[in-house]
Length: 484
Image (tube, rainbow, N blue to C red; front, side, top):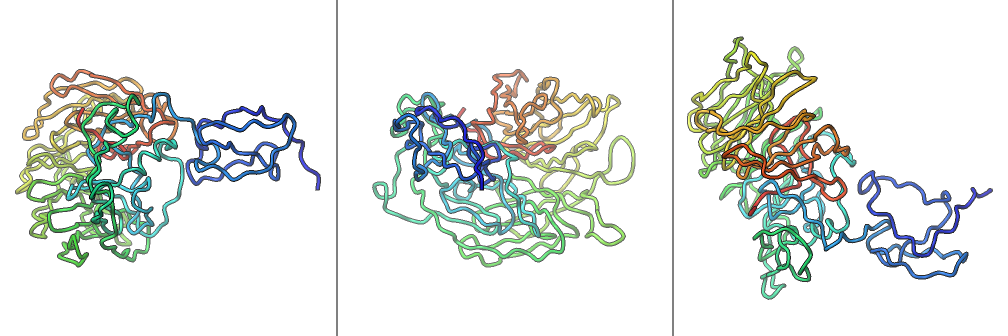
């Protein structure tokens, strides 16, 4: 067999490529220059240093360094600083949450969600009945970011099929760890003095060992079914099923209670009240041959201490029609449950479901697209036409819905996601320039009291791995906000 022509000999000090292949980790890689069969010597040093080789002397194949082919060189000044946003852990990026029972990486590896002990988790998005394809929909991890993520494990990790707890250990001076979290602090981190990382007070947990406490089997389904909702209370791990909410003993994994629902769960709040109540949106009925796609028009509150559906109801539009409005998202802030969608938003009292405001579309075509909750309540309000939308982010009075401040997003933003309400941080893809499927080209830090922009932070696709839902207002992952 004839060999294809060989490329010119590379100079001996050529640095390796600056980043991983564009297909994402695990994606097939192109063959080395010269075609298959032509060995390409990897660098001996994962950060770019290569041994000197005699000119025109073919190099024998070598084992790849630990960083793998194409390990990027370190950024100037040390590790890159991950973006702020989302109170889900200690500032570390998190991989998209996988399906219920989906194979999880070992604790401490990139891709595991990280939460504080007993902290309410953001809704997972398991898809029963279908494997999750690997791909490059989100932003790529640099090698340095992999090291940062692998270096710290949260005290409690929630996974699609169960729960993981920290185990006791006597490493690190009797289980203590005084090193600061790599993504949040600068000179305090061991070996990190002068590395240029942003300020902050986040610390690594005292104990970073973990073990699987229990796992739950997948439900049997006949079609691909997306189910959202996962929370941890003082006693239970609570998980949405196909048409039910079920609680399991947080230590043993034994079933505590189950709340049947008339239809499938469509959306769930990532927040819960201090007395462990949370909000969901579900279909009005189960699918039938005559009605294959029931509407997600029921808003309800689950009391996770009592194990019951506290209330549920539909709501009609204030601007016409007597048909219950369909909702895409639901959130919780204080004693207010707020649900939004393409027909506008509505709000209810947490305890009894009394209506605070109804969905409405103004004469100018403006409506509340979706809300974000937590410590405060904010909304993305959409005006204009689908071809030329204009988005406004407003901080709201949670009991009346009256805007406290407004910030108009720049032109070229079709969708915006609220990453945090206090402080108010918004993510958007301005002019479809992200180019990596993440939905984020920039972060906007906004003064909620005045509506003025504090700072606009570009989100480099090569440096950060955050991503947001394409149309959802409160569905971002792999980022956190805290301590300024």
